[in-house]
Length: 191
Ligand code: NI
Image (cartoon, rainbow, N blue to C red):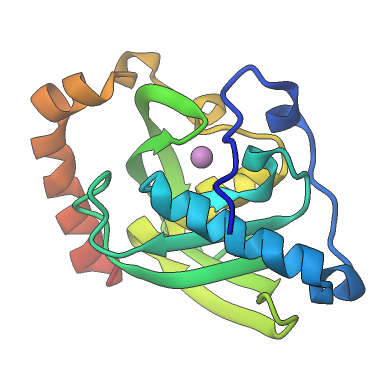
């Protein structure tokens, strides 16, 4: 496996719309190896997710995993999930505020409003149908990753730019309050 280079904000590919993956392409050894590399790169960088477009591969594929993540210690766990050609549909109107960061946006975080419940339709890496619901902080993580496939960064969704902060200032000034918010979201939505 190979660690892939992660594109940083300002790199044009991050602003492009990724292409659908055919069943035939997904089954190829080359794309399967790429998915292995995507997962390895996500884990190496302690990401909660990583989209193919972030590693210079504009395909509609993203990986998610949270396993007591040191970068996001308050995030509920997400088992390793590969989404291919994902479509997210909000369920209901409820939203919550999520303090997000991104491996493509060094040392910056900001508050983004996300839907509290989403229907997820996609393929897994074997081409099997995924159709499930996600909620709360986990729904925020899904939405962040799928945004990448449409050339969007969390920065585009920050409504109050005064929430922008470095990781150090997040820890110093915002983390305690946000952790309490996460606990309330988890208590309400189960994740
Ligand atoms: Ni990101």
